[in-house]
Image (cartoon, rainbow, N blue to C red):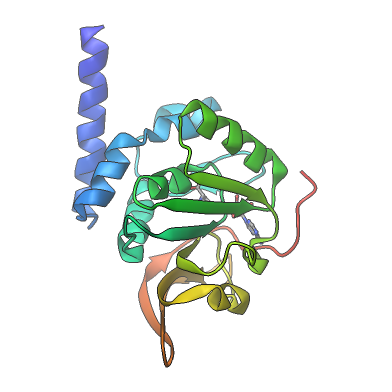
Length: 217
Ligand code: SAH
């Protein structure tokens, strides 16, 4: 028993060390990533690799992102305790769970009902109560909940989706991977200012594509 505990804490120390060494330095983000156990978001044969800094397959041919990318994207979004955040691309629910620790309220949307149903149950089990999960086309955002302080898109778009930009508050930030799905994508940070949108390129990433419309499963 004691051995297991010490193995777990060694694994967590290593996980956090890797995040820091890859540039995740924001204390609140690190605390959230310490608290949310990535192992609970990966089932099946890949579960044992949950603490490695790699993306891994989940159901519906999608992926859970690499932890350091989750950390760097969350850090770039600069989430504040009163923020209302939209995530497009629920996937495993891991990124939404991290955001739930930092924001007042999180809305997350995916086009696969298999994923949204699964994550809904998982969040009940994990007692995460400030996240609402929607089945839908995230390209359309969530007009009834808009505007948002922060928007994070976790699938690659060809351009920052204009409907999502219109759902951002003035002073708000959106993070979105931009580029073709099978080639180099760049993470883009967009800040909505009174006078318009300001774009900044952050770093190269690789995400599954943002696909319009609902999936059948
Ligand atoms: N954030 C996730 C990883 C996302 S993988 C995590 O933490 O695990 C990308 C996700 O985007 C997939 O689940 C895919 O179904 C979803 N997606 C792709 N296009 C979408 C769209 N138009 N609307 C909503 N979700 C979409």
